[in-house]
Image 1: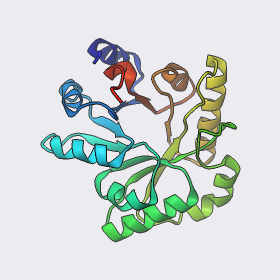
Image 2 (image 1 turned 45 degrees about the vertical axis):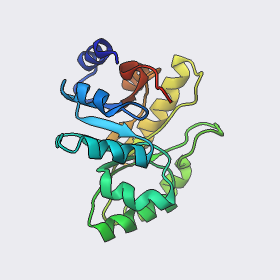
Image 3 (image 1 turned 180 degrees about the horizontal axis):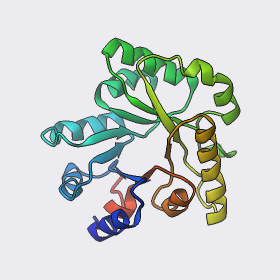
Image 4 (image 1 turned 30 degrees about the vertical axis):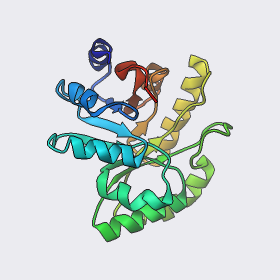
Length: 212
């Protein structure tokens, strides 16, 4: 764990930007270390791993757990039950299922819709045009609070290319009157902030290399 990096980044980022510590692949004890330094928001991408950490750290009531991974249909109810924030809702069908489960469970998760802004076969998400076409229908879903958009850039882009995609995300969010943009990771967080991110998702730069 690189506590120096964590504190440096926390001091550098504007007050309008939230740091989400991506704790997937790291131990509960490491979460506790930076929670003790004031970090409240943690991101997990596998339900079972995240749930186990929630159980171990259940006495730390101030932690906000964010789900940021691919959402499997058979895990939707459990995600709704245990995560207040979901960053990775990548389709209309998934959002509908989350809405239905949230209504039945009497939950109101904060949702970010994942958008796909480049032709990358390894990435998923709403097509921007489809999102705009479906927007009036999407706004009618119950028990979900849609706060913004999330995107993941392809690897290997230049700083200029990263900014171009991040700005597309920010522009799309603005056109839908959504305040939040979850974008930027350990390798491109500075470009994301320059382009209007309100959440950056940092893992290896503060926790170190994952053991798996």
